[in-house]
Amino acid sequence: MDLAQLARVPLAALPTPVEELPRLSRELGGPRLLVKRDDQTGLATGGNKTRKLEFLIADALAHSADMIITAGAAQSNHCRQTAAAAARVGLACSLVLGGEPPPTPTGNLLLDQLLGAQIHWAGPYRRGERLEEIADQARAAGHRPYLIPYGGSNALGAVGYVAAMLELNQQLPQLRVDRIVFASSSGGTQAGLVVGARAVGYAGQIVGIRIDKGEAGDEPYPVHLARLANNTAERVHVKGSFTPDEFVVNEGYLGGGYGVVGELEREAIYLAARLEGLVLDPVYTGRAMGGLIDMIRRGIISPRETVLFWHTGGMPALFAYVNFLA
Image (cartoon, rainbow, N blue to C red; front, side):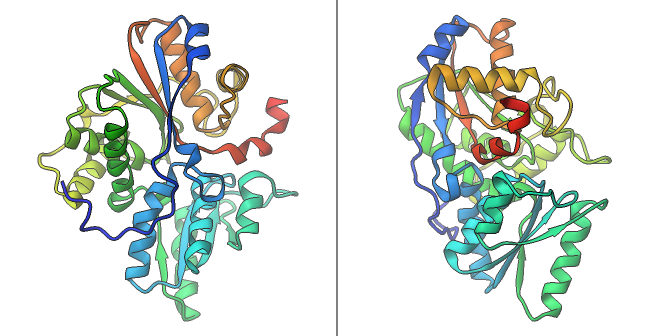
């Protein structure tokens, strides 16, 4: 495997720590729980997208771009970190967000504005439709835009999580981790981890807790993950191909849909905060931790296992969900 041949802009505070969660583990009657703190990558409060952006922003600069354009939900963690990365390297940033502007910007949206991003609202349209429209307008105005897909989840972005798996392998060289559990949405994190796992010889299970159902007409998620993993592996010269059945995706915790906080997320957020001082977000890590807790209680995960929860960040969104959590 070869990562050194890819351009990379240092944006994240790495390596992020791995910590024990002993009080939560005792509360649940085992297993041994660890957390990988990618909420501490540092860029505009951190999160997993910063790892992807190290490679994506480097590619934008290599192509002489003067503007970054990407899209996401109104409380998109990816958009907030992209705006921060663009500010860090001196590029303009345009964000295409779903829906209509709220009366008061809070959470990630407030940070987007503070970071200088220009916000475009998609209204009733799919964000992808407006993404190309905004890019065409930027080109007509003389800009050289670089488009980043939802979540930074293309092959180049996913390389960030190939590198992250190498980092984890160096941090825990003697410790057997039976499962890695995390929130999975646009796919780049899961695809990168699976490619990295093959590269380092990790034999445990990599479990993505599905956060949303995706857009209507999308291909099956494991098919998407396999294609993305194969493209990523080609980038970093990891041998062999990946098939959909190699990806473990739990779709049992979708609840009321994307961004809808239910009792599962609410309990997970309170337990992590009050037992470990660990702050989860209402959309991604709250749902993923809720799924992990449920799998432990149902005996799907044995008390004898060692499980690592990969915290992908998202804390600013809490402030936009105060009515659902307070």
